Length: 222
Image (cartoon, rainbow, N blue to C red; front, side, top):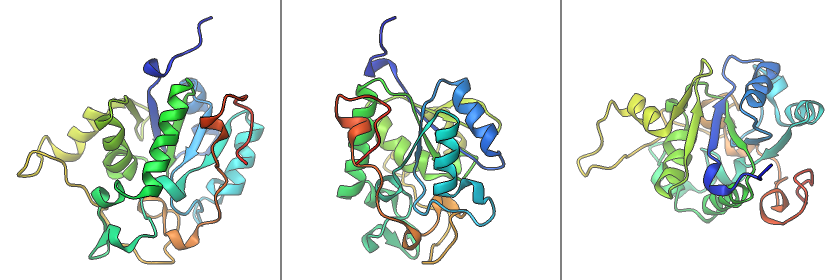
């Protein structure tokens, strides 16, 4: 069997929303997605503790899946105060930060290796989440296909999600101009839009080998 090439592998996104952990994992398996990349800024949930980082990582490992936390690079609520205006996250500003660009580079490297990954956040509807308004826009602009799994399990192209979000209406200059829906404050819970507050984060647990070296896909990040 020929190994998949980067050009043939889209990057998927999914939100757990109302799903159980088992339902989320079944959805990943249905689309042959092995890597679950958590892009919540705060990977914790007081409403659904089974989706908190440690619990989810353990469950994924038991299910034969690979969990990685990328919220410190691709989360929707970065630490940089220059990414906020009146409490809302300005995604264009986030997209210029070095941490975010590093995260995008890791996704590109994973795709080049033929890895099948899903970016996960808490919001079930992709059009309401930074995984479309920020990450999906970046990847699409760089020519990388993005497929979104919506709240009912349907597969949508990025263009279809943007149509849901904008109704086909862009800014005066013909470009998208997206922000978070909510105003954020430190100490908010991980179930809030785009993954909660950055103040609740832990240290990094993804340092490259799954996406950058030539080793086994089973290797953990150092």
